[in-house]
Image (tube, rainbow, N blue to C red; front, side):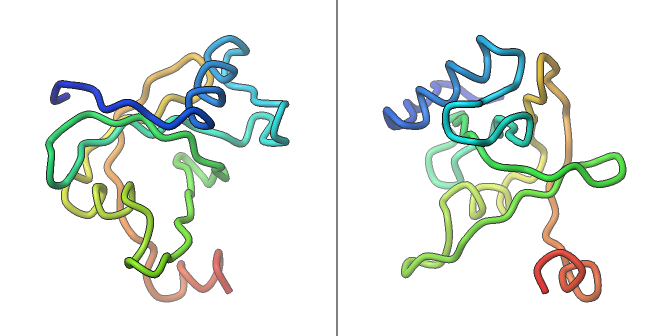
Amino acid sequence: MSEPISRPNDFDLGIIAEFRRSSGRVESHGFASRVVLLHHIGARTGHTRVTPLGAMPYEDSWIVVGVPTPSGGPAWAMNLRVNPDIYLEVGIDLVAVRARALEGEERTEFLG
């Protein structure tokens, strides 16, 4: 992955630290084992970023959902559109994955 690593905000740093101390569990904010650490590349900067996200396991993959913002969506979602080959930290494992947006019936199934 690209360097340098960009620094997450203090809230995210706390989640990341608890995740890593507890082999992927984050009890302090109610995530339990439904959190992953998304290792992604900044679309504009090329810097590696780590973002904790609530996630739902689905078949052999994970579903993460970004909530739209006035500027168009979370930055990590834009980063995945530009650089979809990423890593997920799941428990104690670092897994290479290819991100993709849900479309059509699949999107309706999860998002209504």
